[in-house]
Image (cartoon, rainbow, N blue to C red; front, top):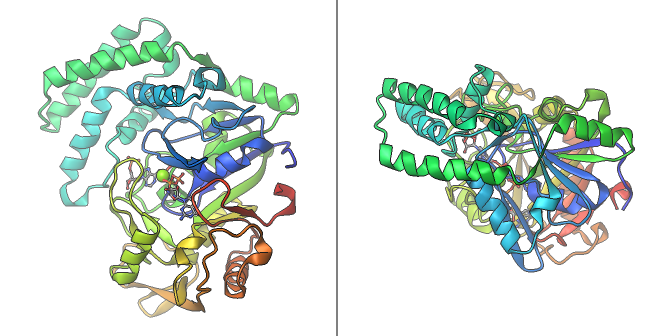
Length: 432
Ligand code: GDP
Ligand code: IMO
Ligand code: MG
């Protein structure tokens, strides 16, 4: 495998859960550093190898391969209690996480009251709720942007006082929202939180922007691991049904402190179909048996919340938009095997809005008049899960790849044909 020489970015092009964790793990041997740049424990990145399955939330998916340094960047929001659970589970399974991981001083901490605020905000929205993961993501980023945040570096001095100030502010906000707070439960959560912050202090807490740029100057390479997906980006996603960070490529620059001209390849990951979890518009969503079949075959249940994922056909209007926003140089298609048994595959090539067709992603996809325009392709009706090379692919699957490449104008460099690390077919010579 050829080593990369720059900062490459790997991110989701749909509504999350595209399979980012699996591919980061596969590509890690090409890099010296793997870094998360946004999101927090709302993410659930699944990896499978040697018959075992792991779900990572805040820790980068490079931790299972030897040799790479993993970084939680300044753009990430970190829940000390959940981080501790995740790290201790990894330690118990034999990964020396303390040696492999560095944490940015500038990462913001999720407080127990942020989670209460997340729940109270959702309740206040009633039927218009976002369907968040309930991990306190929105309130923590809100505090960051309103300049009330609590950074990991801030916890290194006078942290109990600072914590109490933030907590009291949150309690006032909760009262204004009419939320009832169980003070006994909160006290127990606070105790665990403060202990977990102390646990965090046992890690290498660094100025990650200096560390990463210093390493780049020495010729080292970095893979940035995105969380969520482009359609959940706070600026460009299906607002307000989005997460609270920039999930697009630009987020890697702000979330790690790397300059745009350092960026090399942008790997855009998508499923051969499409899913979404939580509320909000989803133009190609299927409410019929086909949607159910996709959910069953793809095991489409959330890694974090266990919620059913909504399923539908691939949406090329949304994907074209995502390719544009991120400057995708290489596409990675996941879960192709889930379509192995279908007679016909559909792909949405345009939206029909009030009788007018558009291939450009519109401002409002909640419009009830919006209907997906589909192209139908013949299925390949072949079990691909044990295939070793792209030469073995059935002709109809090759035609599906060609069709997508033409529609998106970017080559598909990797095709995933199952959840295991080994079920990965690399088509791009440079990545072999
Ligand atoms: P992430 O959040 O983008 O890392 O994705 P998730 O881990 O939340 O969801 C992807 C799910 O699909 C996980 O359960 C993976 O184990 C599984 N998966 C990944 N690639 C493939 C694939 O090619 N085929 C199948 N059948 N499952 C896959
Ligand atoms: P990964 O990294 C899929 C969704 C939630 C909700 C919205 C806002 O595993 O792909 P939040 O808790 O972030 O305020 O919720 O975003 N969401 C995800 N959906 N995969 C994820 O992460 C997600 N992280 C958040 O369901 O609709
Ligand atoms: Mg996920």
